[in-house]
Length: 236
Length: 236
DNA sequence: ACCTGAACACCGTTCAAGT
DNA sequence: ACCTGAACACCGTTCAAGT
Image 1 (cartoon, rainbow over the protein chains, first blue to last red):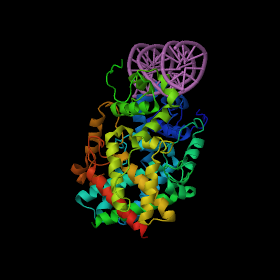
Image 2: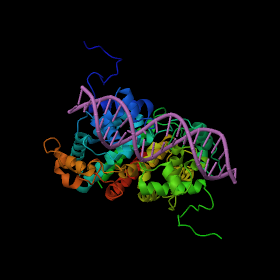
Image 3: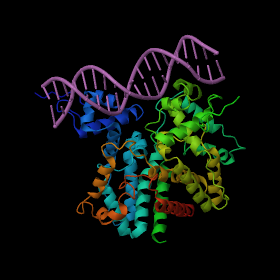
Image 4: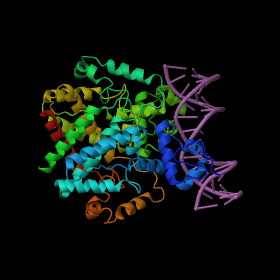
């Protein structure tokens, strides 16, 4: 008789572990507690298993994190027609951002794990190359454009969702607010003039991240900038 | 009689600790051993001091890392005239990249610590706003352009110098090479066609990072793309 | 004010042993 | 094949005590 247990979504303790189940649980745990508090021991506890059991499926903590990141990003694929490269790229950037928005805590992994291994989204890579080629990019320009697209896909969101300290150590937000609001007119005239519009709303001058304060307008302007820039690169 | 000790550059064990000396030593240690192996205990050992001594000067490990990052990035400032915004931004992007190139191991910190605190480079922020305003950016466009410049400054290099696994666990490079070279023509026709030009040379398909294989051409194309895109944004 | 020395509550990882 | 149970060598951080 199979009795339904407490309802942990993607792991059934009666069926044992699997790589897939571990990655699901890992992503869920990172969403919940953040990377600082994520540990193999805590993950094992959630899956009602001994810590060492994880190591039978994944060789190391870093390998687990890398696999979790790829697992999270592996579904991204615009369903736009690939012959309109501008529309396709726009869809890619937006769709990717939506994914990261659902899992903001994974962003540090994008630069702490070189994005390349067995689980990477090679389908997306191939499609990107196809789109750029049909757009007219050739030779050295094609590869430059490809790198630019990858950077544009991940670069803005990693900055937008950059991690906050997991504990408000000694009133961190208060210190941030004071620092930014204390920037004086003499030393920082331009910051001072636009203080109201900048404070906690744009890079470096903020103390919340995209999870609570998304930078929608800047993101859309960034997408526009990249695509217009690529258009210039194409006809250079 | 002051006897010169073993010649650790910026810390003299006879004069005691200081925030400055700790940040110098911290950056040096990260350069040497990488973030994975960096620890407060190891840092303390290098400075010939008990671990707890560090905590008198910096409240926490994360605070230390954030301060180290800012310490590393705080000197960046193009010496170009600010009235030519394109030349100024180009200089900014290049100078920043040179800094990161000297300290590639700090890149993960850029997204794991929200870039904002008492030690951030607010002079650079103010100058950036000045340059963009004299270029003609106003209102909402000014703030979007500002966010784009910050992203462009840090986004590409964080991807370019994304960290590798600190130990070659189970022949990681070998696995990477096999994975990339094993991408078959049927499933990945475009990758396959350009395999020679892409393998270990561009994002996702590589297993070394910018420390050993810099992406000079792509970086310059990215700078061009951003600036041309901003030019379009300005006159939209 | 600044650091020592020791302790506490955690980690990742390994390995023999079980089933 | 897959997991247990215990152990090892580390961590970050706290705190009383020294100077």
